[in-house]
Image 1 (spheres, rainbow, N blue to C red):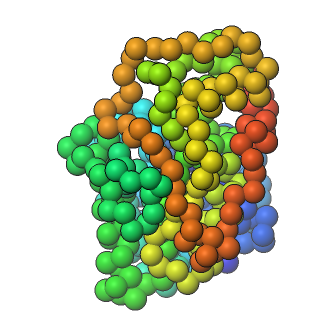
Image 2 (spheres, rainbow, N blue to C red; image 1 turned 90 degrees about the vertical axis):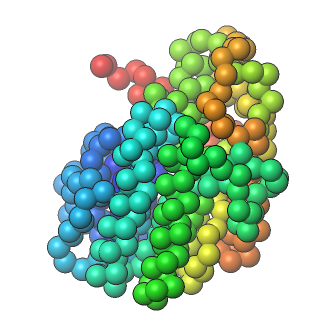
Length: 315
């Protein structure tokens, strides 16, 4: 296949590049580096099956030649990013998705949308399954991301119903691994960076809020299986091992060999930040025969090893 991956220089997109190339496909990655990085694709320079196009997908997309699949992963994804770029986040969710769908339709390509667990907002049910409509504040600060993704899902389904396009929607839960940015504001790089530097890990509030963390390789496997499937409705991809932020901090310190401990902060979390986040993955298990394979401790070991390398590089 020849696949287009928007956001191809981002954390998840860059790992998808590698997976498709490893399987013998050709990849066109598209990015404008708002949150992606050239470092994430530098190792692909000279690969004859890899092509990079610098472009903002909120503008019309043109890709010469055949395209067999379009994977739309372009978007700021961490709170620190989409609060810094609120309008760009809304535009890439709306205009970017529209443009990517238009290209996919013109090329008669299969389309996959990277959606998010944030479509559930601050959930009133736990775990969250794909039939739950969510509890989202459209005018709160997080609404720029939550509603952009909810609109994108609606647009994808409209193209499927109106034009008969082969579309897929993956709802991604908390994912971590190499190539995350240390400064992206999410708990995994925050904690790992502090642990490697020998600093106390900053936990906001009492640390009782819960998350489920999946390693990037498990997510990529789920995406590949979903793309190859005939399933149109959204599918959650995430791990169901739910732990508190406090417990996660202890695990990170142990994995990094840090004895600096934890420092509790009275600083409040971002408005609308969900107290709990846990996917119901029954649909992924039954439809895709997918289950996460990499335990948190193993994934953290790999990720910490990567960040040690990053932090040791000269600026």
